[in-house]
Image 1 (cartoon, each protein chain N blue to C red):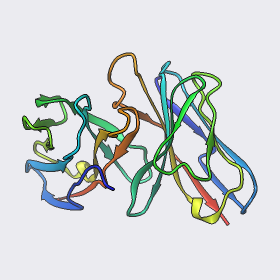
Image 2: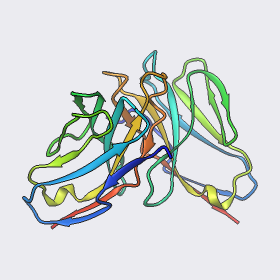
Image 3: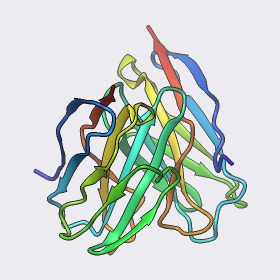
Image 4: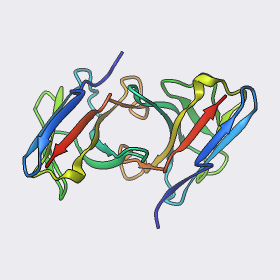
Amino acid sequence: LAKTTQPISMDSYEGQEVNITCSHNNIATNDYITWYQQFPSQGPRFIIQGYKTKVTNEVASLFIPADRKSSTLSLPRVSLSDTAVYYCLVGDLDSSYKLIFGSGTRLLVRP
Amino acid sequence: EAQVTQNPRYLITVTGKKLTVTCSQNMNHEYMSWYRQDPGLGLRQIYYSMNVEVTDKGDVPEGYKVSRKEKRNFPLILESPSPNQTSLYFCASSSLTSGRFNEQFFGPGTRLTVL
């Protein structure tokens, strides 16, 4: 049973803003939402983490509605180097320390 | 430099020949975890450990063993590898005490082929 749902793939062009949404209907009260980026044959890399409302860092923004059943990763002005797979991560229901990755969204940025 | 290291990076072996993939981190992290990644299936957690001598199963633990005798090391053991364990394996670690355990640091990966 999948704990998170993301679009399989997305296409964009350089300079555009990209929003990737993740659904996590059964998120636990104390779970954080975390997003990772992965390039081919490399380990995932942490991008951003949040609990509610909005979080922003130098790379991305994360929007979380009040019910926390979904979250949206926003990448401003993407470049070709942002082509990667993006994973949404939340803690498992049984234990917050059993982490489950979503299926990932393959983002392709075109020139 | 803060990092997670894995060895070997590449391994080709035969069915039934026991092997160990080592993982080591230098960040004094309490939490360590193993994942496997297969095409179309994303990352699946095999085992995790919250501290020395504390381990628990992830989503796909069958056919694997782990141990956590030291805080920095978390080896993955395949007692009798089978071809369906051919995969790309990642080790990761994170801090529990800082409250940011979801912020995991990943190793470079070990590509295992079982013939």
